[in-house]
Image (cartoon, rainbow, N blue to C red; front, side, top):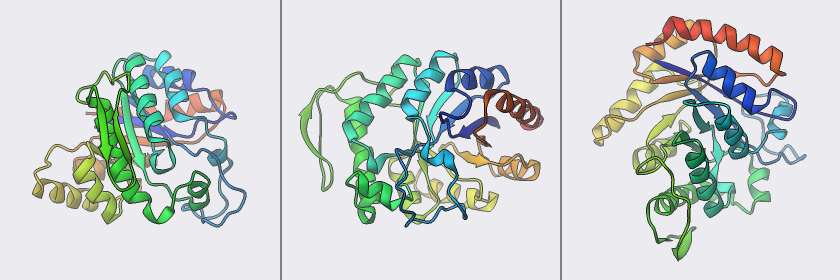
Length: 277
């Protein structure tokens, strides 16, 4: 099993370049960065983790900018969004940002996507929370068209454009892997239809992993990689995920200044080495 980290890069913590270099030096293979464009002061949508919303949620750097900085300070580290909130993003700009990141990193981009939970945030982008899942399904199809065709076009209920030229194209062929976040029935259907990998959160049990693998296998998908997102440093859970066939664990890395982050990475690296394989 491989190990990476998932984190929020903010203006108050370690910068993405030193973080990427430190991860690669310690043998981690992937970095997944969270995204929130902003957080409305109104707290209508409850924080899924319970209690007050941590300040890191409204101080995140743009993940594509931060991952580009990380690319410049690493050679092999996979660079993932974890997750990009696609329904509240401009589709064509996002496709070009992802392709550009893949190009400048030499094919290391991993496109982790999710529908999001903060309804006020979505509405500020003009997104209807009630249809965000259907919108993202079309966005994923359209992005694949933009990434793989010289003249791309798409005609759906929520996404519609006539033939366009959109460059650069990604280095990875046919396109960077798309990892679907979420554990709902809708997320499973999205994974089976449009995903190249699954990015479940840390509350996902080994039994749930096995169930999803069986569901995918029944649909002819037997090779879908799975990365646990935001995992705790819990050896029992890691062993259970490994037994269930999880490919990678991305440890939850709290947002801290550089010196504190490096000390924490040293601790996580020791744990990862005991379970790597």
